[in-house]
Amino acid sequence: MLTLGIETSCDETAAAVVCNKEVLSNAVSSSIRLHSRFGGVVPEIASRYHVEYIGYCIWSALKKAGVGFGDLELVSVTQGPGLMGSLLVGVSAAKAISLSLNIPIVAVNHVTAHLFSNFLNGANLKYPFVGVVISGGHTSIFYVKSVLDSELLGQTNDDACGESFDKVAKILNLGYPGGPVIEKRAEKGNPKKINFPRSYLGDSLDFSFSGIKTAVLYYVREKEKKGLRKSDIDDIAASFQEAAFDVIVKKAILACERKKCSTLAVGGGVSINKRLRAKLGEEARLHNIKAHFPEAGLCLDNAAMVAYAGQLLFEAGKRSSLDFGAFQYCTDDN
Ligand code: KG4
Ligand code: ZN
Figure 1 (cartoon, rainbow, N blue to C red):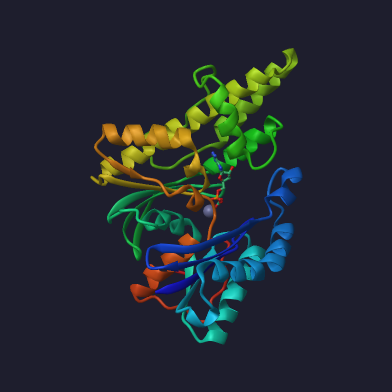
Figure 2: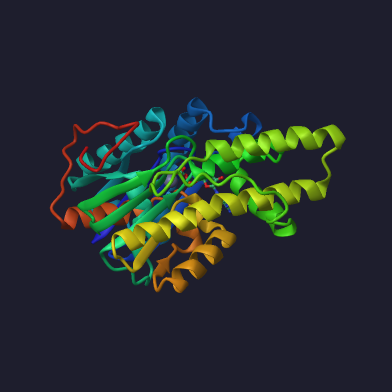
């Protein structure tokens, strides 16, 4: 089934064409450089960028896939969660395409869509699985039995994991987004140098990342009194990253054990991080759990995951009518 996916929930304008489990094109245009001097995404800038680039992205996705509008059989779009102004651009474009081509439209939840990246391009993920979404807006654990049946097992009570990377990078004056630069600096640092707190919250599957961010802030303030060296920043990045990932790894394995599930799928922007992949992959192996990670181009926000999730929902009988709204907070029932 030839599906056009559209994603505009935050700062990536994205369109992709997916046919069954094969990604034929995956166009992403990011407004990230426009936000970096503000240290985070500015909603108004993001939505104006989407308006400007959504058309180019859709044309580019169709061209790269070698198909025309007339070949499309389904359009699938992120309904939420995300920034309201940004979501509206994608939802409006998708509705216009559905109406003018007279093809069905399916509204998709962005968070769970991240997990479905693990089915694409020859990957062999099978249901049921424990899914961990680690992104800039969410850190959530699900038990997924099918595209229509996922149970939320835990989520963050405050900052998302990616958000804590962004905030720590801001404290260290490393710019936005924080994830890639923290990962890079961490490669040169000592992860055991500073024992930042790990918030395990007992045996809960919920997360809390605000404490570790504050601990980094206080540590940096103290260090700055004597002067913060380049190697100090590397050590802080490595020690912070290690503490954050210790918590993720422990809870991901705990969720698999609780659900007696030996398949784990990870998704979201942070899942591109090599240290996370190594730590989680190794711990999963020790517990006889098979860990799946999306290919690099499908970790961060993209429309291929949205196209595929929409295709699965369509095959399971879901159809959205043209009057659906965009949602800042979105469950799969919307
Ligand atoms: O999934 P995503 O593209 O957007 C949301 O749905 O939020 O994730 C973006 C997040 C940002 O917080 C960014 O700092 C983080 O993913 N990120 C990383 C890395 N690359 C991006 N975190 C850790 N290591 C990375 N290499
Ligand atoms: Zn995302």
